[in-house]
Length: 132
Image (tube, rainbow, N blue to C red; front, side, top):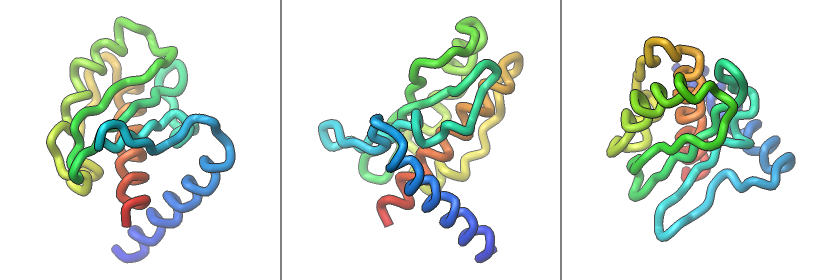
């Protein structure tokens, strides 16, 4: 258990270091008291069916307010299914619960769904690590 936690912390630390040096898009910003995590440069290794599926995760008072999909190259017909089926799954959850939330992929858009789920998880992990 401790080994897994340390490995996860090391991974997040490495991602923090690498992404802080390779992008112009800020990962974490504040908008009217809400922390916004943008996974555009945080999750460059995560791809959906066609390419990257970045998201913004909005967090206030330690809870996820909403998740919003950013521009991507996924097929609109299928990605609409992902947006309707997934984006509200984390709303209202404390970040530590949301990070571990088991979310099923949307049938018919599995690869895109899994990419979005991993983007959200990575964004929330980044937030937790940055706020220790």
